[in-house]
Image (cartoon, rainbow, N blue to C red; front, side, top):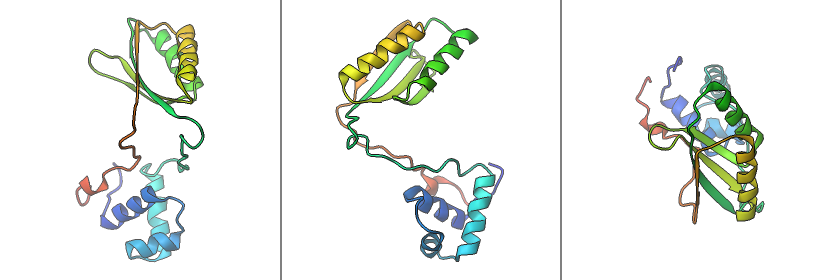
Length: 160
């Protein structure tokens, strides 16, 4: 982290995580500051790369995306060409919300959001036609218990 984060910065970041659509006046009031210093701090945090893309969270179920699958992938392929094809396949499939390369027995885990099991099968068939994988295990999430994009800012030490 190239920039020092103080208590006011943490409060601003917490407010932005809670609701990035707030006005500067609202954020300033909540953090006990005025608009201009808050704006300057936000600019500093953006320049430092601490604040990235701002977006809107949509309700997946309200839009009909009722199934979340966690897909465990093992591969016997580890060459650069295979990895390029695999990463391209992941980028080309908007159903893939997250993808992680893992240490251990499983090589990759994907979070895939689709309308239903049939839509997952279409995704799966498409993926395996684009890239060779050794083993795929799909786990259907029965209930989302917790999901957040918020980082635990209180864990940051003063002056970090």
